[in-house]
Amino acid sequence: DVKVTQSSRYLVKRTGEKVFLECVQDMDHENMFWYRQDPGLGLRLIYFSYDVKMKEKGDIPEGYSVSREKKERFSLILESASTNQTSMYLCASSSWTAVVSPLHFGNGTRLTVT
Amino acid sequence: AQTVTQSQPEMSVQEAETVTLSCTYDTSESDYYLFWYKQPPSRQMILVIRQEAYKQQNATENRFSVNFQKAAKSFSLKISDSQLGDAAMYFCAYRLCAGNNRKLIWGLGTSLAVNP
Image (cartoon, rainbow over all chains, first blue to last red; front, side):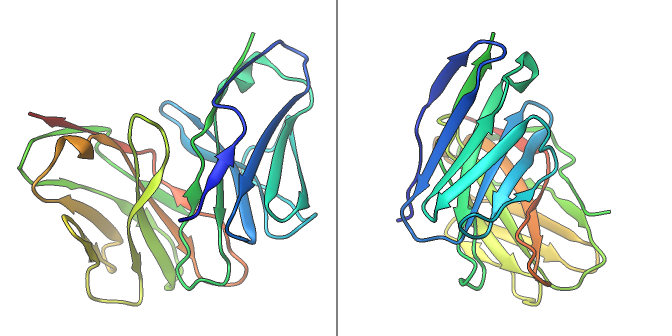
């Protein structure tokens, strides 16, 4: 089974801190995604990556950046955390070569910015 | 515009009964994949069922089946013999096949409660 691991389940940070959320997948998937999930707003795509060192903006990239130095690892960076970035963050990966490739999700990181 | 509408924010079903969650979507493309995902209270999102738009036959996975109506752009999920473990948030989504499209378009979800 595909395993997507997010480094932290819960995280509490202060306003203005630089925050790193890490995600690792073990199935050699080309695609990796970062979503945030908020009640009533569903899942919103922040960034995704389809190859090492490649990245594309999603629907809400403002205030975030990403890094993909290795195929299995995709990091989400909050350059200067703000209270409106308090949310659940979900990482996912998928294969591009599979015909109908679903997303495989991590357990999520609940980030609170105070 | 590419959108997915799940018109039922919350639903409930009695254990062992059948429930149908609705999903409609909007796209001008003809080739796409459709998905239902489940997110239990433990939070990990998992795939329930998927459907290729070019297939007329409705997908089934054990107690889960879909009613795919391409002309109506409808993709409902039927859960038969509901179990307590089916209680979760359910999300409908689709992805276009064309080009290098990797993004899913998501609905806002339906929260399903299963009553014992």
